[in-house]
Length: 317
Image (cartoon, rainbow, N blue to C red; front, side, top):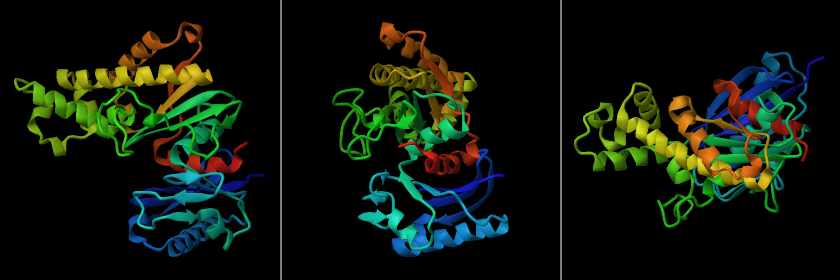
């Protein structure tokens, strides 16, 4: 007999809500516009209305739990804490708010931790006890699994490898620091590298020279690299070099079986992955060589965030 859970992915623009079967199939989804809400209690009420619709429309009477992947989501408290990209500010206790509508367990964590647990329960990390997930998007997130459990630390915020310093006194990061990994290997970081090279290579006449800096995206860079554009290739070689160093450093403290990658920049494929693997092997401590696979997430792109959130309900904390 199948069981079901709810996965909720809260983004600054939209919130995706999915009904997930225990075999990892997302049966149906709903969506509301997060940015329209300034009152968290109204937001939670409307999200729960969508959950009830999903269950009714699919003949599901009960769910095992509700998993919420949220910016600055804290598993210990069940709260979103001062998320900069949400209109409802301060501390929002989602566990308590959803508890007014349901007796199902409610689990809250950040999106990178959700992605890691989604990979463990439904993706390529099934059967693994030790791995790291890097999520490359607007920022860089990470989730670390050791002995089959997410590393959360004292505050619930452990594993923020995107804000580990890669280059001292480097690029300014949104966190207030300088030189964070995120500023070099996120989609925004890739664009920054591209713009820097365009400013230096005034004789460059390739595909990316026809756009204003504000028009360039990391997707465009990836496509140009795969079409053989030399500047785009150089950008992804630099990005892979930097990310390879960060991944090699991460291995030294958790000794994973594999490192998984997901997010838009990863779609560039070998244009990014080949220099990344080369840098990773060059910088990896010799005692770990040959023991760590670098793999792309096996979660389906369209459902990855929802599956990750739903997987939180099965977490072994």
